[in-house]
Image (cartoon, rainbow, N blue to C red; front, top):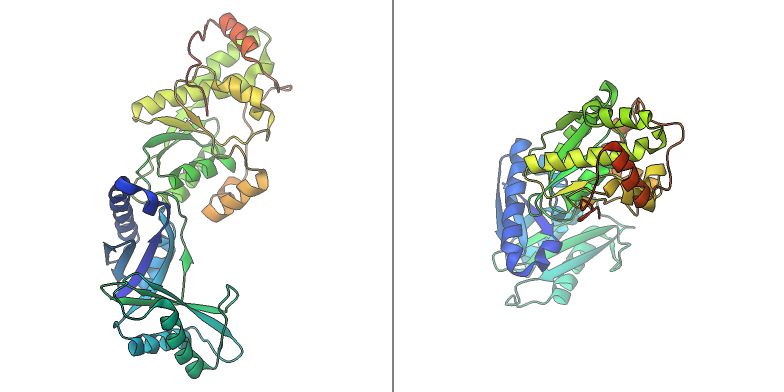
Amino acid sequence: MGLILLRYGELALKGANRPLFIRRLRHNVRDCLRQNRIEGQVESVGSRLFVHTGQVEEAIAPLQRVFGLVSLSPATEAPRDLEAMAEEAVSQARAAGLGPGQSFRIAARRADKSFPHGSPEIGRVLGAAVVRATGARVDLSDRADLTIGVEVAREAVLLYSRVYPGPGGFPVGVAGRVVALISGGIDSPVAAWLMMKRGCHVIPLHFRHNDIEAAKFLDNVNVLGRWSYGWRMLPVVREQAEAFGPTYRRLRELGEERWTCLMCKRTLLLEAARVAAEYNASAIVTGESLGQVASQTLQNLAVISYGVPLPILRPLIGLDKAEIVELARRIGTFEVSIRESQPCAYLPPHPLTQGRIEALERLLERLGETGEGEHEGAGL
């Protein structure tokens, strides 16, 4: 059986709640292995998690999508003896192709202070053995061509030479449920992913206005599902025409088409709140970024949030488009989102860019809504 060392970051700071977070992380790692048909066992020792499996290489890529993990390394156990540790360090260096003209360093961590040799001594002894065996030179900086990690625990000594990044954050499932409004575009799937990174169970919601965008939504939910270990993402689809059509017709009758985008977004947020009640979710997530389009000015964000009874989480609010695109590429949703698009049927020729709450309240009265007292708990 091979061994993979899993590292977590923020979870270590959780104090009394840490066991709950670690249990959820173990559960999600097991779900990752199960979904990818990888046989293995998961255990936690001290501040580390370990996967024992005969399919080490196959497990690396899926484990890199488990939220809560900051990095992982295929590792080899060695006896708690300097000579045996040096032999394994040489083996790691040779396996990595280290040779003359290249550099390396030994990064030793002595978690078990009863081990008689300190980290500097471990580094000197193992480093000397690698130099003799390979002719490589020592470079203690981050610029070294190869880093051989050594972790000395009470149970065993682990050595590794490969470190793969994880997504970080919290395990999915420790922060409650949210409804994420997801279109066929680039931004909203990224917003949903960021809330998964903070430990949320995401319920993806799409308001269908054409088949092209609906298909992109479903494909992006499948991509996001590859990151959602421990929670099965089930898409929820509602018809935009049913949710907003009556309001749109009244706006036209009143000659207030300029309010179309703002009233549409507000109507869909109110409908999302109803879906959240059905699924026992505590907040709504959107892909809005401040100032990116007309409906996303500060004034208009206040207008579309008016009367929505749940918190509205906007994780992209301070990101620019280039940053969002970079995240979409990393997640895997970008290629789906840039496929053929079909615009919304309700786009007005001159959308309102500076809506005001007072004007909205007057419009709601004309539409037969008062909105009185509904604005408490508006969007974040």
